[in-house]
Amino acid sequence: MRIYILLPLVLLFSCRSVKNFNANAQNAPQLLKDVKELSSDTYQGRKTGTKGVELAKNYIKKRFKSVGLKAFPNFTNYEQEFSLIDKTGKSVIGKNVIGYIPGKTTDVIVISGHYDHLGVINNQIYNGADDNASGIACLFKIASFYEKVKPNHTLVFVAFDAGEQGWKGSAAFVEKPPVSLSHIKLNINLDMISHNDKGQLFASGTFKHPELRNYIVQSNPDLRILFGHDNPKQKVDDWTYQSDQGAFAALNIPFIYFGVEDHKDYHKPTDKFENINQPFFINAANAILEIVDNIDKKSALKNTFREKLQMKTQ
Ligand SMILES: [Zn+2]
Image 1 (tube, rainbow, N blue to C red):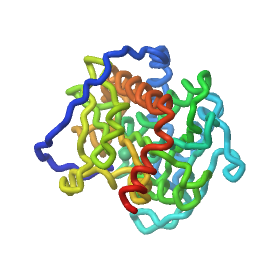
Image 2: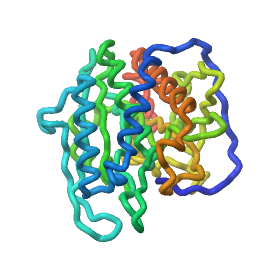
Image 3: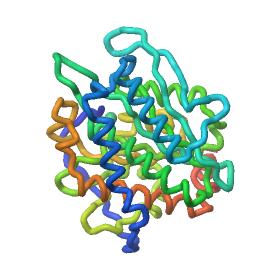
């Protein structure tokens, strides 16, 4: 869910590494399987408070379990419930799905995406394949990679509910987080990563934290990772508060938001599995995993972002 206005952007292009990162590429069929499943008619567009979103939540819990994610003691069964008033004025219950992989330190990276979508409008199912079954499928892929390789950071994975209702899931998460907020060093949020005809994926959030660009590599000639959409001067084209990373940004927690610019199927019933760009999506998911791993490997991270920020604000 984002406001889209066409404005020319000054984009920076990073090309720090040509290292090939094929690890986990064999997971592509599972990645596509997950998007196909979550955007199928079974889930009726996954609108918050409906049976469809409940079924999607159950599928996510099943996948969290199968990739070995642990549940926090205060969110047993991976669930965090919260109440909200939806955009039609109805009082409903939202349910975030939260799991984690313990790292070698208690420093936390939160990897997130919203799993709800728009539901059924005028008898048409809004399947939300790109928005945001794609981001959730990539969460599973990242978690699955770290099932085999222990991360340095503790990785918290969250599938947020009520993204389309004004990012209520991420608001509930930071209000009652499973770990102390001071331990959260970074949020990596994924929202719409499977549909772009130009091979362009945005990594937004480096305007305030340019040091993050060191980890954002270009290792695939078929994918361009662009910076931008994070300068407050861009007004409505600044995406900082236009997806779930906003809840973290509001607390001065650094973020990288991965997403594409809006496309012809954005918030339309045609945002279906058949219309995502499969090669682009696989490339994007591989690149995101590579970047997560770059960040995790640099132990300097834990002493970098927030301390720099504190120094700036003192
Ligand atoms: Zn979205």
